[in-house]
Image (cartoon, rainbow, N blue to C red; front, side):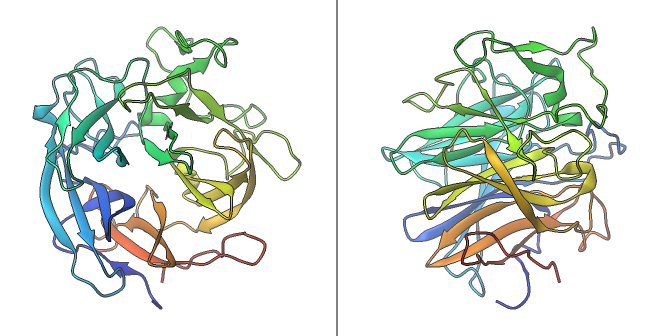
Length: 337
């Protein structure tokens, strides 16, 4: 695979979460549309309202099957709009779609929908996950079967509204408080020397319907071994993804307004994670969102850009290309040719 492949040119989809179930590779994207909303820093122009699932058996040349809509916002009792990123995990023959959407008050939460097969249909739970907030869930199943959810996104993703309490690591309730401003807003840009706002990780309950603990901060250490600062262009912004390679945990993410895909490596699902470098330089379009998966002995990076829509940032197209590791376990930077 010498050049990237656009996976589904007939429709605009983004934020691909790639998972292998059985002998097929499934992609769970968000579904872009032109809603007519104006561009703003809160992402009001991203008005996605449903999810589809795609699958294939040959990443480089095979036909991509669209299995159709698997969930619509009108089917979710607690959600009103903006069905953003999602991911799916399997447990005991059931498939759990964890997704982000806004409630009628304009607040993002995470929800769960359940199906008997990855093609759906998915039946949503009547309420969001208790204590959930923000966007961009990645559900990671470790080798021991334990499932973790990584999540969070700044600016329109509202992560900056929340602060971990001092008791967050040992208190299963009230693990976050709203930001200091009465309107639940905090500045989009923190002082450069302030600690960067972290992504979150939480162990899921045995039934995969709730958090089993308070969320933990995903700490990324810079080259000096210190927690990354807000002014670092490689700090976390959104699009958490976790995969495992040779016993190590690879936390990858988007830097948002600096438009990189970066990664860090840790020894446990909770981290801390030491920053390693950039996977992908900025693509055409404001957002950069991805997943990394092994399929049939090859590693792949799934992502999106806005070339087909002439840089219309809310109309994105899915792409894939191979991913390669160096002998020391670091990832070779991908070229978006």
